[in-house]
Length: 345
Ligand code: NAD
Ligand code: IPM
Ligand code: MN
Image (cartoon, rainbow, N blue to C red; front, side, top):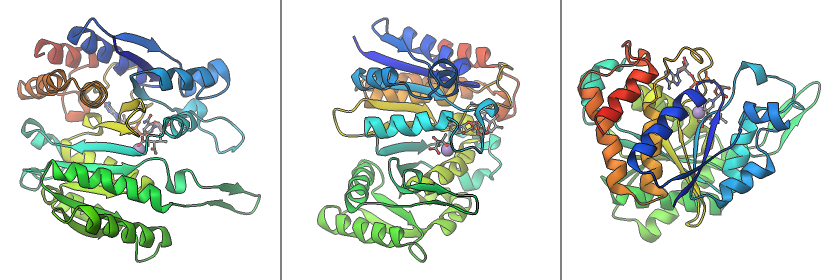
């Protein structure tokens, strides 16, 4: 029986986790779910966003399913106060989850929900492979009364392993990798580029590799998204570009993710979006990114490919039949969206 640690978190987190559990229970009665407070909810209970207990439970589990953390209640510029987001970063680091996969696959039913023109979106099917445990997120931070700094550091090994993930993913897709960096300015990017090319020459010459500067990549993503296959990039660039790419699908409420590490690490599965404090409590959050993250969990953590595909196709069919939550320009509530997907499962 697979053990899944569930982390509802904050804001809309619990509102989309509940339907996800309903969906998973419909698929199988054979899950053991273990819920833990996480993020702001854990700060309230334990004074820390990720307790030792929760981290230990995540390490033991077959997979971790997370909704979202954060909110105005814990927003502070004081470096000594705990923040919900620290829990997420500590969890990724603690589980060694260095590879964050963010598939961007707009469904034809939603082409008109995107602010981009249909002819630009058509045919887009890309995967952002975001490095998740290095870079400026995890470098030394300093703060004095007169200045502050965040160190951006990457080891060759960190770049090497994420490059391999990207090339392997491309091999099962359209065999193209765009490596996004800022090598015209940053030393970390120059080494990134050298390592990616070395890995490419060693083992992946069947894959087409292009280097794209991050500012240009941000532009190309909205002008010709269909030309991308796999985008591999460092932590901060990947964070920013994936929110941008979400709009190709119509809404940030559509984008799932999987964070993976070495073979024996429990994966973490979560929507790309945050806790959406502006709509929390209204019952209008789009649960589809959460459902699609659960599908990624079934596929990557449990190797339940049939069940994963069934969830994805239930989402597609509900959208084909007209399901639209508010973020997609419609009126459907979270509960109605959940019903629509379950009815198509
Ligand atoms: P956000 O992604 O929470 O929201 C951005 C906008 O998108 C908001 O207008 C929101 O209403 C909308 N939105 C997001 N998800 C939606 C959904 N499922 N359905 C409908 N609309 C949705 O980003 P933000 O407002 O910048 O951040 C809010 C909080 O979330 C912050 O504390 C931030 O640190 C945190 N955050 C957490 C995660 C995570 O837990 N993985 C990711 C991003 C942001
Ligand atoms: C994400 C989020 C997180 C990140 C925050 C909440 C720490 O934006 O998962 O994309 O920046 O990685
Ligand atoms: Mn983000």
